[in-house]
Length: 365
Image (cartoon, rainbow, N blue to C red; front, side, top):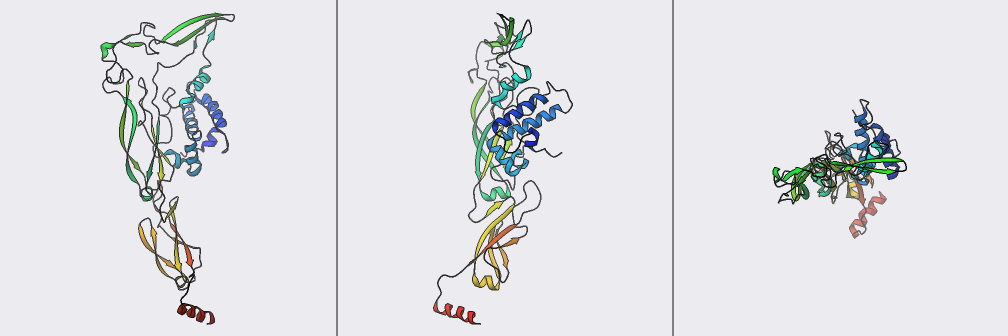
């Protein structure tokens, strides 16, 4: 099924501000979140709203979408998404997790014996952060596709402790403060009655366990920053400015939260003689007056090397000649575009005596 327009998904116009985008997103995310909405299509709509927000709230992704539609933003990796809905908040924009949590579950406290859930949710799995980078590729590599090896730094799960942060299993014990619950309760008396709050345990940070001896490799941090090498495949016909998503190639998460994603923006270097618009190629050539008047075959550059184009007799300056099928391969489709050759007739500025006589004879004939 074809994807809906992202602006329609959020119910906003194309000139919407970031504030309007965020407001529309929060309203719809709250409405369709599967924890609150039990309709069969709620999860699908929730994902759709989330994806639309992630594209439109990011300036670079929004520009690519406005220019190329879904093809410009999906990046051949299934679209932009932060991992999709997995029963938690792994896919939300990092800066808005607490805001969304507050909207879904109604604040941080209850009155008269009702439990509230304030404070940090630090005890649960946290998905790793995404990484964004940019690479330059040659004009012809964008036309025909290529592979590029990139080197970048990212946080990866420590191999020595497998992400536990402990030296070994015997170095982990039940938290002495919360007795393994991960949360502690406090009661405060106010003029409105008793307020009972449940917060993450400050001793174990909500994990329910304490480490007596930390892993020597990561010093208990559970992750290590390393240089990673990754070969990416760039498909033929990729437009300039498109961002490709590679799942699980970002930073490592905490407490089993999984890896973030890697976003690679493609910057296409210009060609000396050719210009690409979609899968069509444009160029200009100069011809002399005689060729323009009498016609001839002339050599022109194309993405496949030099080729011949027929100049009809009587061609005027700035005329455009179409070369069928001589453009670049279609982006994510079959066939080729066309090449358009703009002809510039060059008028001689200086003539020899003999040339001048010939032109005068032509004038009089």
